[in-house]
Image 1: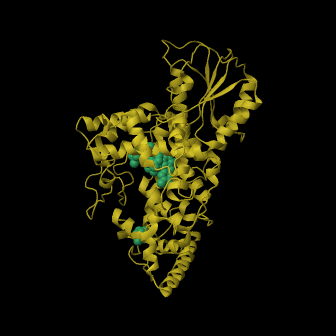
Image 2 (image 1 turned 120 degrees about the vertical axis):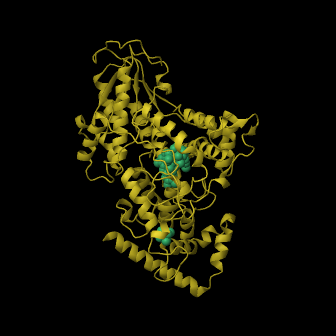
Image 3 (image 1 turned 30 degrees about the horizontal axis):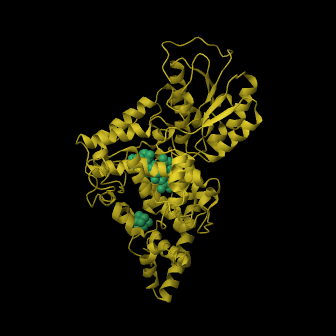
Length: 530
Ligand code: FAD
Ligand code: SF4
């Protein structure tokens, strides 16, 4: 869409040809819906719905980010002379869904052309709008989200006929297809994957210099939103005084620049490392901006590849980062749409426990969990290994119902949108999809956490101990998990070594382990309920 030379003077009462619906995670004029947008005839519709903030118990920063980014986008559109019909939450006390709000709007306005919208990032919303389309007289056209590099059809073609959908093969296809980080037909640097160079810890001394990432000061729009959220969603988890996320595309570009300068060079090496009091380390913090479409994945990876081509960042870091964006990010989206809506109901391991209350408060004496949860409540952010190998690992070992785990992850992270959150939670972290995403459950003892962080140093338990009062609860629950699922996992070759280690235990040792696991569960629940 071209920027008009000056704002056309169109009043709210003028007729509308096409109405472009923009949802909270579709904040870009580059989307297909804007392709033939004519500011003289067309208009944009946006609405803040209380249901979207409440259907999961959203972190306050997640609500504030969506609302502030939406209001900034409205401002940007209006500055381009675009007519925006926008309903703010203050004026919308009705618990109406977005589909109902749109229906109501269409009854009051004459849209002579079509309603155009980008496919929502959540099956629930897509269904609601599809249902609406059958109830209204104006044609509603849903276009594919064009911000992704792999279309839904392309993913289906790749997936069709494969027994296993391994991300690595998808990723190589994406590299070949897009030419990203390729030298002709061969991968730049000679290898497809530098994963083995992406697993360093900070050792005993810790990260030497961790440059703090750029954080953004709230302007008047964000301040107003923060006040609203503080007032309206007072009992929601998290805090707002640390809110500093990019809320507009210029801020997001600035965050990208900042990451290229400070984080990228060591990103690969320390991708999996964790450290007490260091919530961000070398991570980019770009997921919220990417998911809201303040940044496009293409501009991010092109900028990252340039750092390698111009000798400012090593291949291990650049490949490691690009793998996350054109590999994992595109892949989980493909998995989501391929398997929804049944995917959300999967529970391959039959897990049924409730999520312990401390997930919402951080009050636990397991230091690894406390560190990951405290920063989650403080910023709405934790990096991948904290999500997968601390909070996710504990929920898996505890046997939490995957639906509850899913609701927690969808609520608590500022970057959470279902298409990306659900496969990561249900598939990768909880192994509830029966192996679509992960070839084995991501389970380990506390020794993994000890190797990748200094969390165990500040903990009253010992990661290498599985009996007695000092036993690490993660280690105890790990053995308990293998014991409980021994049969179900027996056919999985990749679990062979772990199950052989279990088999080496005598019957007495195993029954002692079960008793220890039961005791551990009891005191964790008691502590959590106090
Ligand atoms: P970086 O470490 O800097 O990585 C760069 C980018 O790669 C990210 O911004 C992100 O866009 C992409 N990326 C990395 N890993 C993944 C992945 N596994 N799947 C998709 N994209 C990836 N990511 C979300 O964007 N939203 C979620 O709701 C979400 N929920 C998750 C739940 C669980 C249980 C797990 C294990 C992972 C989840 N992730 C989610 C993936 C990943 O943890 C986050 O993308 C990442 O931590 C965001 O921080 P960052 O921007 O600093 O990432
Ligand atoms: Fe976590 Fe166990 Fe280490 Fe404590 S000892 S921080 S519970 S892994």
